[in-house]
Image (tube, rainbow, N blue to C red; front, side, top):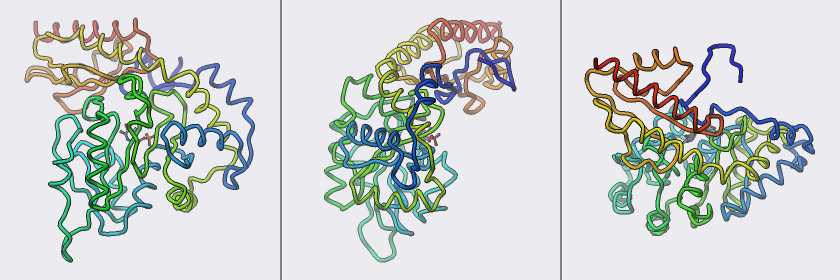
Length: 352
Ligand SMILES: *Cc1c(COP(=O)(O)O)cnc(C)c1O
């Protein structure tokens, strides 16, 4: 691993830090390609078919990023003035440059929730009664797993209850499945059980799956036909992108089951730092590959990050009292242990 900007050996800032492995690159180099825009790239078609099948959807669309998957879904589902119900910590609300309002003309009606998960009753409380002067409730968006919520997993039953409620109110249901496969592995549940009844759902290839680029958005034939228009309009229709889709196919074959290692490594980090004076691990039970470290008043996140950097270690600074650790396939168990032990040593040194 080389980097032009720093000598970080253990990067736990995000699971986007992964580089394509040699075997993944080999698959990319031998990919059959064609003009994707014309529906002629066989590798892209194969990837879309596999993801649609995994998610129990009729069709799917290859896109350059997860953000574009979310934005295109809202562009298809919403008209200007519509409202999207989502968690207050949702990526679509806080981390996509207000894309839903800037592009689709939709606004958010957010639900306050500590871990990014809400129930059908909370959705019901956020659905607007139809009146001329009210925004029109249009979409419920959930995030599997929850990013800012600490990698929490939505239970299948909760999702089914939300789908049923949404149907009653003619709302679309959208899943930001950036880390859907982390939930699949951790809960030992097929992806399509989570996405059952959803109008749209997508998975990110460039997070835990270890691809350099890409997301795949799935839905009904009609939904994907509309989504294709937006893919073109936004400049997301590519050409010989089979070379990128090949990385996705490689990841589906090799990088799903192994997500369990990332989850075990995140738990290892939590176990090593738990009980440390002035540090609280959140969530208490780490279930997937994300955890937060809440710092007491004497500790400063930027300060800790600067000292970790001297050891070639990077973890996320969320705010002065909050740090984030994300495990992934480019960090070994030994590396995670080393990072956690360095964190403990630094924090103890600050207390002394
Ligand atoms: C990373 C992420 C996205 C956006 O994906 P990109 O591929 O980085 O555009 C959307 N939602 C969640 C929950 C994410 O973690």
